[in-house]
Image (tube, rainbow, N blue to C red; front, side):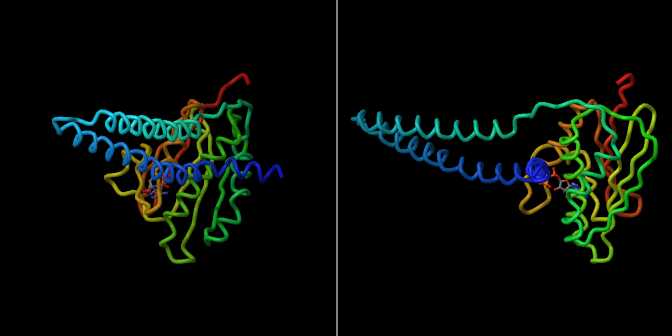
Length: 239
Ligand code: ADP
């Protein structure tokens, strides 16, 4: 049960993309109504003897369609609202292993082999376990998407942890299609996507979560092929 709850939470990033898509679709309806009503009002006003009763009715329709649009946006806002961060000391290797366990069956289903290379004796970091797992899972799913075009025996993901200069780093290295050079600067921005059904929200949510942890997230292409995403989290001493 606990695992199910966590999975529900962890799939929020994916869900948000779909929900945002359907809300955008819903928004079209009041917007179209507002436009056609406003155009009708303009037509009425062009007559010398403008029918004020009719125009008043049209204005009423515009106001209610606008309110409906506002409610839809409000719903989107509350979904995107940041959840409170819980802070606790964490072993990043445990956080990572749990995240991988949660998506293991997806990885198997997509024929992705994962190689976890975790450094021993890493200092602990402070953060929100579930939110960090959300980030890692999103990066792993993106890596899987990027390797979907590889032949079935060639989908290899390497996840590596180490300590460096007061930080703990996690690298997620795939052997997929890589990030188009002209997109490298923009992939963490909202609504940047190359996927047919994608919303381009995952990486921007990841960046937000990592920023709340005073960390950094970065992406680069590997020298040979595929992409590498790095999450760098500060080690807070004395906790
Ligand atoms: P989405 O998955 O909905 O497209 P994201 O914000 O998660 O949204 O990703 C944005 C874009 O960044 C993707 O559409 C893809 O073009 C690129 N991207 C993300 N991860 C990778 C990766 N591992 N390899 C290649 N491109 C990637």
